[in-house]
Amino acid sequence: GENVEQHPSTLSVQEGDSAVIKCTYSDSASNYFPWYKQELGKRPQLIIDIRSNVGEKKDQRIAVTLSKTAKHFSLHITETQPEDSAVYFCAAMDGNKLVFGAGTILRVKS
Amino acid sequence: DSGVTQTPKHLITATGQRVTLRCSPRSGDLSVYWYQQSLDQGLQFLIQYYNGEERAKGNILERFSAQQFPDLHSELNLSSLELGDSALYFCASSVTSGGYRGETQYFGPGTRLLVL
Image (cartoon, rainbow over all chains, first blue to last red; front, side, top):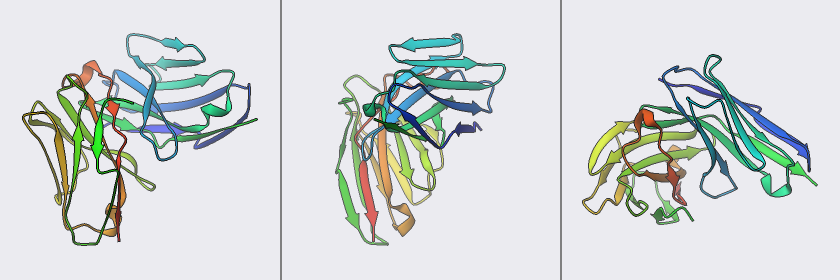
């Protein structure tokens, strides 16, 4: 089955700087890769997703890149703000289920 | 607000007991997914139902079972509870059965289960 690895486990950045979170997956058949943001005690919220026929997708300050050959996808957040502080999860679709990475705690220091 | 509702928000019970968690999907969504989130295991897929039928199974213990009713709400039953079952249980919903087309899954607010 699918295995997703996520790095780093924690990330601290200064407000206004960029943050990058990286994930690798194992199943070359996977073709859907969402990113979720989870604030403490709350539900995971989809922030962006990408499908395998696209190499990059951008939504305001958030972008995701995908390399199918390397089985690697990344989340980029520019001009970070304190409200970006949360846990971020990458995931890959394995059949009908999402397989999640272990999560990255992002702290944005003001 | 995702449109997915879950009850109860919190549940405190004792080892050996049985509990039922309830989930109502977004209006129009046919699939319901259950996930368990614990500190040591992260977010783990348990089971998926699509239009009343089981569609996919993950790391779900035999002590756990689920069903989806004709009105599309779903229940997750946890029995013979152990301390290690303490976790956040999320349900999510999507429009159809998902699969390799990759459908967005919208998460509910979760039920926090504490087994004492």
